[in-house]
Amino acid sequence: MSERRYVLDTNILISIILLASSIPQQAFDKVIAIGKILQSEATLEEIERVIMRSKFDKYLTRAEREIFLNKLKQDSLMIAVNITITDCRDPKDNKFLELALSGNANGIISGDNDLLVLHPFRTIPIVTPRFFLDNDV
Image (cartoon, rainbow, N blue to C red; front, side, top):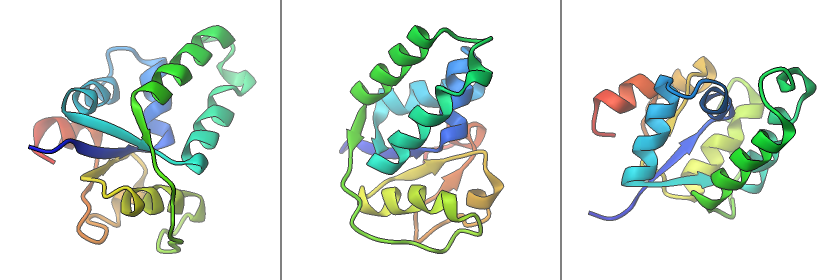
C-alpha cells in the first residue's frame, strides 16, 4: 500500500499541542503511523502565526511551541500548491482544499464546519478526527 497523505487543519494542530491525549492527538498519531501530513507554505505560515499568539503563553512556553513546529515540519511533506480554490464559505479555509488537491491527499481531517460541509470535496473525504480514528479513510 502506498503512503497515505492527509491535510490537518490549523485547529486540529492547535488541539494536538494543547491536549496531549486528545482525539486530535490520536488522529495525528494514526496519520504519522500510516502516512504523511501535507503542508503548504500557506498552511505552515498559519499554524506558526496562530501558535505563537500570546494567548497561548499561559499553556506553553515559546520553546515548547517551537519544538512542536519543528516536529510538525519533520513529519510533514511540503507541497507546492498550484491551484486556486474558492469553494469554501470561509475563504481562509480554501488553502486546505488547495493543499489537498495539489498534494493528492487521501483525506482532510478537520473540526471546522466550513470544511466538513464540503465532504467529500472532489472525492477527497473531509472528516472529523473521531471519524478518522473509527474508519479507514
